[in-house]
Length: 627
Ligand code: C2E
Ligand code: MG
Ligand code: MG
Image (cartoon, rainbow, N blue to C red; front, side, top):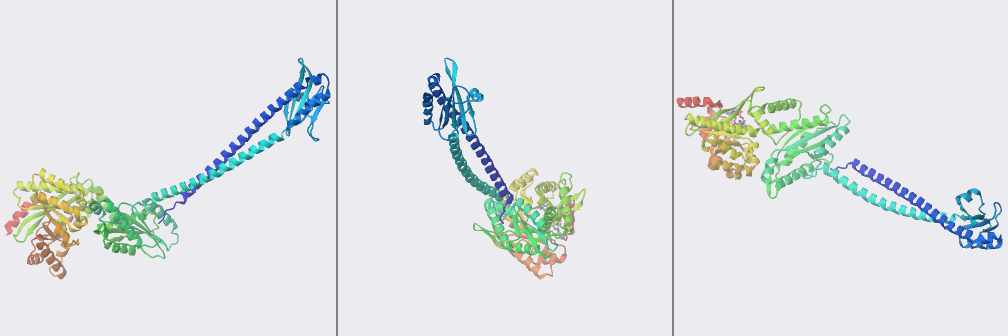
């Protein structure tokens, strides 16, 4: 989609027009000033010139006047012929009729010897300039010379000057016009580019969050007919952070671009896909005739992402959690539409990711609950509301408890008992898991030390790690530090990481596990069978144990499929030199089946439910007693 902001174009047009307007006024004022100045200076030099001439005539005519020689006077005046601007000249011996005169043509008139002219020395009329000069002999006036000059030459010169100035004005304006035109194009191009940058995500070239808000609010305004509505699809890549961490940011960017391209290619031209955050995309879908397109598009996206992306010879698998909302629900505004899609997306994440959810009003309640969990969880450690319960793992070969799994319990002051199934994902999303996870590790280490002091040191204690924790590069060091502080042997601890989590970020997980293993910890893959791990990777993970997911144990014996899965997981584990434990064992029959297929250990309510630490000693004693 192209982002063109018409406002930007209009702004540059407006500023260019005003620049031209200012240029035009400035040039015009300059031209008027120049012509006026030229007029004044021409007039002055014209006057000076004629003053010289009239003085010459008056000086030359002293004798002729004194002797009343009219002929000689006219002879002197005739010399004026050479001065093309002089129209007429006259010598007066007394006011009234001239004593001698000279006229250039028939139409030429003589300047009258008025008192004003005599006093002023010169008078500018519209068409001509009159001058008068008294002729003195021995300090006494004996006559007067008048001279009339046509201003035509002055006007001609002025007109020529004005014409040249007008030409210069027009040429300057033309050049200015061209320059402003070019500047206008450049400014318009620069503005268009800036607008593009402000509205476009540089990596995917899709509209960014800013553009998304604009487009969505405009699209909502455009939906007028009741049978039409808008649907918003929000999509968050589930494991992008891991890809970024393991392949580097450059490859991460390539992946985002590829995801953007693959997903937009499956959309209609009218659908608008935007990148609104790191690994978050949004699609604005227009739906007509009460048709709901959000769901099929979400399904299509899940299918489209199933095939791997090839980034520099690496096959990268990406899944997404998708939430959709519709403006048909209660005529929603942009905020509500986005919030609903976000809630639905969160719901999809909570359901195990790689899936989609269509917003339903009930989800609001869940979102509020999650918010209240998050708010209360923030103070859980400080308020001492967290505890660890321990669930035994029974080794079937030796019939004895070889380990306990530490499971977090939260008794919130405000919410009461909250299950880890509910609060762990919230802690994960909010980032609180890092602090809580370290608390679990420290607490478990301290507990091992207490049991050691009570001579109950005969078993390992396992703790669960969540995905966000494993991304912490200092995790292994922090764990080692916690064991060191509690003065316990690393061989006493086991780490459980779920299979899905392991497969999300293979390379860096291998590194983490190898580091933990080198410190002497045991490693177990939790919820095994649900995460599609490939045999090739399984071989590379430095693990000790596979923990069969509860889902496969629930329906055995009886479910042929689950029995087959369990049998093959055990064969696979043993083939790789790993021990295999089954979780969620609740019945004697389940145990009998697991024994029959050579499962190494079991964990479940059949043995015992998770119990507080101070019940462990009693539990172990009663178990020994029963044997
Ligand atoms: P998980 O690690 O797979 O833990 C096993 C869960 O199954 C526990 O639920 C346990 O109480 C339950 N369980 C054990 N035996 C049986 C059985 O026979 N029948 C049934 N129906 N359930 C059984 P819990 O304690 O509610 O924990 C749920 C999940 O929460 C855990 O699954 C784990 O993923 C997470 N979790 C618990 N504590 C922690 C923790 O300290 N850190 C992290 N990161 N996750 C934790
Ligand atoms: Mg576990
Ligand atoms: Mg499990």
